[in-house]
Length: 119
Image 1 (cartoon, rainbow, N blue to C red):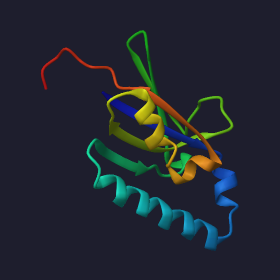
Image 2 (tube, one colour):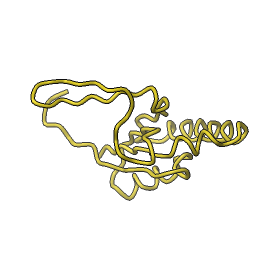
Image 3 (cartoon, rainbow, N blue to C red):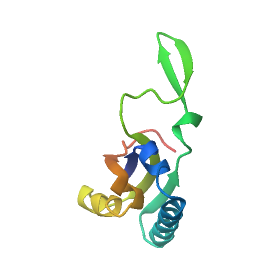
Image 4 (tube, rainbow, N blue to C red):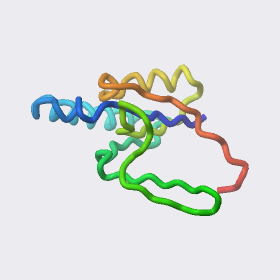
């Protein structure tokens, strides 16, 4: 079963860290990804650019509108996406618990819907 781990944190809190701590966090994240690539079931992990680089698309009644920035009502922003293949939710939780930046926010773990359409 594929799971997506959506890592949310407050960008302001992260950006307020001293450069030394940010560099240490980046090194820890790189080590995490390197280790995870050696494991069966790891599919992808990427940090996202800051929210000021985002746009939000909405489609209503056939019309598409695009606005600058994310517009979810939340204190934390989506900052990373990790895609894994785990045998069950318990194993997915174990993988997500090791995401370094999770200590600044939360990780939403959600099963990926299996499509009936051929790939």
